[in-house]
Image (cartoon, rainbow, N blue to C red):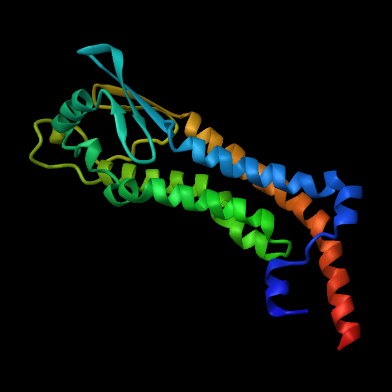
Length: 222
């Protein structure tokens, strides 16, 4: 068995594919579906923050996409200025500039795993599997960075101690109240991760017997 065959895995005989089409279709459906959901998530918000203040009783809202911030950004930045927090648009500059290419690349790797009929498919799928956790970890880092590095020259700096805004749930800072929630883009990414786990399970069921058969055949020939 050639080294390339060990990486790519055995090809499915046409007669077996015709006989057990569902067995080999399930990994394609789940891994391909996960890749599609990740691509769709690029165009949808991942995280939402609603801020309530005395002068804004109905609340202000911002939505975080993988590459941009939308909503009442100017108004919230003005309020944050009083407690010494930097503008939301200054967060994650590198991540936002590369995000579309990175997420698309992660999705393509997950899709490529369909054509890898060996355990190497797991390594192709790991980035997409871990992506929601990576996004939340990066979001938390920037919330921590902004909340613990307040400008001491701000008008209300003495009234607010360094803090870490939550990435989920409610919090109160001085006279402000915030509610953070995950949005549809992140939920799609989480569903994609679940689909990858299921897809890898069916992938193993479909291709492990073929790979073992090829290895046994190669051993006998040697």
